[in-house]
Amino acid sequence: MELIIGGAYQGKIQYAKEKYNLTEADIHICDSVEIDFSKKCVADLEKFTFSCVQNNIDAVEFFKHNRHLWSDKIVICCDIFCGVVPMGAENRKWRQETGRLCQYLSKEAETVTRIFCGLEQKLK
Image 1: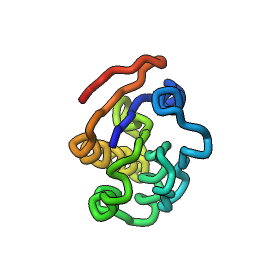
Image 2: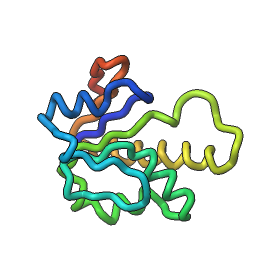
Image 3: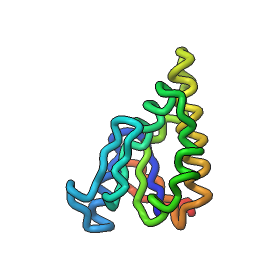
């Protein structure tokens, strides 16, 4: 699995498309607690964690129990766990859960890449 992280609008999906010859059809864009792991790439993972917070689901445990579904995927997550701490409790929990999930995934990943201004930075 390759984990790609970076801030909003930094070119994460474009980087994955170019590096892995992905098309739009190869990418699942998260928008709920449902993830289509039949796709080569799972993007916007932070939206998955937000849905998990809203539905009282532990995102890390979900990924631990479903490792066989994502171990060969490209996973993309927006870096929401840095910067100013949100004032609202739900948004703080979302930020924390996204950070926890990225920590777990980065340990499990073969490679971790940060995209900043469209440039890749290999972290692992």
